[in-house]
Length: 119
Image 1: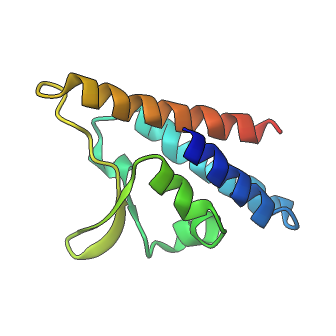
Image 2: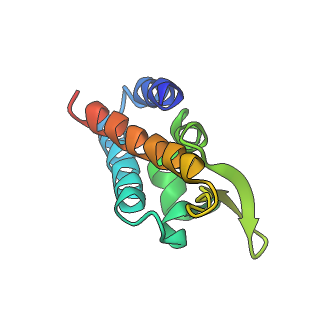
């Protein structure tokens, strides 16, 4: 979670001159992580197309934006040859500890984003 906090700080600094862009980026991250935490089994919430226009407008164009996802455990990959950020859910039946660590990181990221929103 420390990496997420560090990248959120970089995001905040990189958008300091544009408070609207800062608010949009933080709110978009909050929506993304809220959906994942509420529905961790839903693969579609755990995949973000790297070339998606709205992602790049809201989050990806800012220093620290993409890095928040990486710090929260997302990896670069591709779905049907489309470059994506992907958060892979460990198999809960075979690796309960791994699943718990994965989910705790996502919850921690969401909490860090919520803390940034109230600053």
